[in-house]
Image 1 (tube, rainbow, N blue to C red):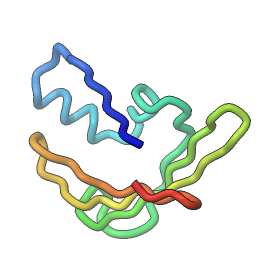
Image 2: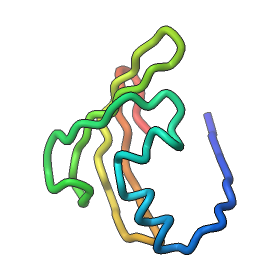
Image 3: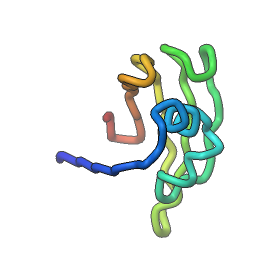
Image 4: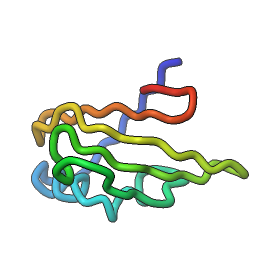
Length: 87
């Protein structure tokens, strides 16, 4: 499955990075987002793991985010693992 989303934002790059880097803002751009809990590593840095919880209709989904690369403002890569799913 391929998924792509494009969004044009009228913000200075520094402000966008600041907003993206604050986990309190995830509820604004991730539909169904419930919570984020730090699991291991340095918060927000390469190798850090966090438990993300989402409500999707009647289902609750929990996944582990592992930060692979963090080179703001140019790149952010992470893996997302849930039961039977790896992105």
